[in-house]
Amino acid sequence: MSNRPGVIWLLWLVVFIDIPASAQGWKAGTARVIITPKEPLWQAGYASRTHAADGKLHDLWAKALALEDSTGKRAVLVTTDMLGFPKAMSDRIRARLNSQFGLSKAQVILNSSHTHSGPVLDNALQDIYPLDTKEQEKIDRYSRWLETQIVTLASQALQKLAPATLFSQNGVTRFQVNRRANKENALPEQTELKGPNDYAVPVIRIIDARGKLKAIVFGYACHPTVLDLYQWSGDYAGFAQLELEKAHPGATALFFQGAAGDQNPLPRRTIPLARQYGRELAAAVDRVLDEPMRNLSPQLRTAYSEIELPLSAPPSEAELIKTSQDGEGYMKRWATRLLAETKQGKPFITSYLYPLQIWQLGSQPILSFGGELVVQYALDCKKRFGQGIFVMGYANDVMGYIPSVTILREGGYEGASSQMVYGLPSIWAAEVPTLIDREINRLAEQIGLTTLK
Image (cartoon, rainbow, N blue to C red; front, side, top):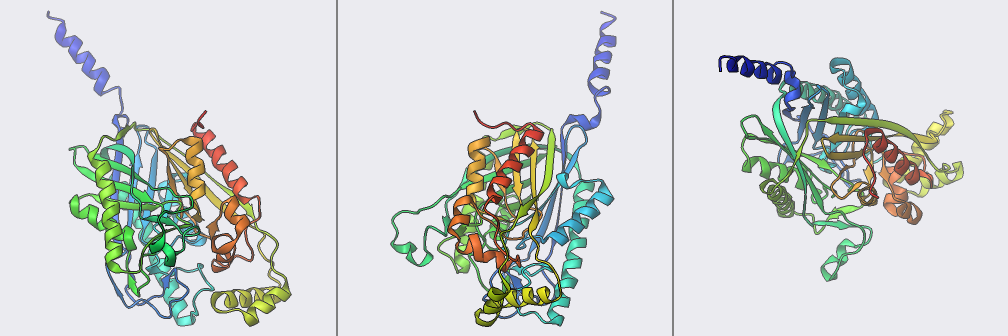
């Protein structure tokens, strides 16, 4: 009997000393900052707007979630009430995060809700609005300030890393409508909706060491275009975050946008509808939080790549001249700009460097894509990798719509003319969907995500 205390002490040493503190589980940290412009700026998203914002429904936010797994590997998710990060800004932010914190591009996701009631940023949607030098200077000034806010935000989240437990599960809600297959003005007479949809509401619940709800990460695949006012807001996604944070004091709610390129909230155009959809989405999240969720082991795997996506042949000089003379609005400005660049000897770009990314949090895969990803990509990925995966669009760079094979063939706004909204000289080449699918499969294989048999 006299030897038992020594045995117990030895076991204590094995359990609590030989295992490093970082191996005990997840660590998580959150931070948030208001990014509502302090001076009048133009709002991004609708070409029909004629002046800058003149008020706000609620503040715009940027929020960050930092994660660390049992081996000490870290990652940062940033969500924002913005239309989308343009490439140059995204690259600068991620370069600063790499320099200051050693985070690679694979370890950082910059996601935007795609609200159409947020500010215009520099080097984005340059042909939509008739901006003079003074307005452009304000946009540039705000954009530089925003970059610093995002880097500071990530730093604060990393500094707040503390023991946590992660859970995930999908919920559902159904105010999203395929806008290509269902005309908005005919919706009241329709008895059924057409076209592909993905009604999933992905949710990650993060609990601190005391068992208190620390953060809620959730998404949905639907354009935040309920509102077209001249007031700042996060649209339905902003209202959903407000609802969740009101229901769960002290928790941070982070919304990420899914494959929403061809999905609209319908009906729309009123503030009460935006609030209604926000409450519906928040209720869907709360239902998931109240039910059993999958416990995620503290293992983080990340993969990232950028691939060259080819563009089709650019318009001829004669076509550009005709559009510059006969076109209206952004199409006229787009053609005029390209003609000027041609005369300066500047060649048209023939491809675009496109970002793709996968995180795996324990058993939860998160696939993220740049651009305005249409819903077919999410549906196809779920067929390959399982219905439980999470899919993000609008991640790291929003350079245009990313059409499916069918949409690229059919054309229309998402397949053709929208590329001019983003300033591209032409539409995507026919092989682009295949190249994207092939690369996301390669990244999945790289981190050990297997396809369904």
